[in-house]
Amino acid sequence: MTIGSPHAITAQPGSAILPDGDRRTDGRVQTVFRVARVITGTDEGLARITNLSDRGAGLRMMMPANLSESLTLEFADGVEVRGHVVWQENEHLGLQFDQPIDCAHLLAVLAEGARLGSNRPVRLQLMATALTRSEIGLRSAKVIDISLRGLKLEHDGSLTEGLDLKVTLPSGIERLGRVRWVRGDRAGVMLLQPLSLEALGSIQRLMRTPEPPVGLRQEPQGADQVAQK
Image (cartoon, rainbow, N blue to C red; front, side):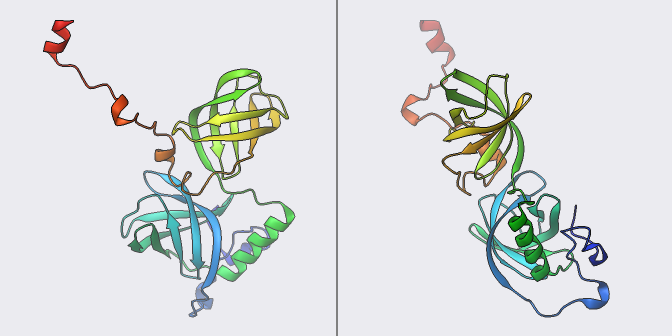
């Protein structure tokens, strides 16, 4: 749910927008290092919020974005705000919200949700084939979603709770993990080696198969080379 009317504050944790007659003029900039999910028109990834105010946010993200490009910033499940890029320098950028928010209230609500355990870590939604290696052998599985510390797999029924395994993602990244729960053909894996923000900075990059080293690449053969064989 997009952050909306302040009159729903008691019912909706993300309701941080101030009423039109109560726009605060102060910036109320707060330094935060919270991880958020950023969605563009062509990609999505995780980013670090470096500062937050009622009217915008500073982000550090690996996913490229252009000036004036519209982004959706998701703080937690169902808690999101839209804005557009107003400045950019390397991996740092500034986002101006389409509508001002009450950032102090938003952070307080998110902190309370974390304390109660009601806020799941932000995660990326994807359907990618990964390889798992464990005592039961080599298996392929579908990654349904992924966060810095865990992922959800769709498997062939061979995964069991408590199983230790190594997961290899399409990009070649490998992590050790342990199956925490199994429900039908779905399994939740806790990563024993957390992923970095850079690794999950872009779904497109995460799903891209790495190219082999230059010395191992096979050069395309011309017609004369084929004829000589």
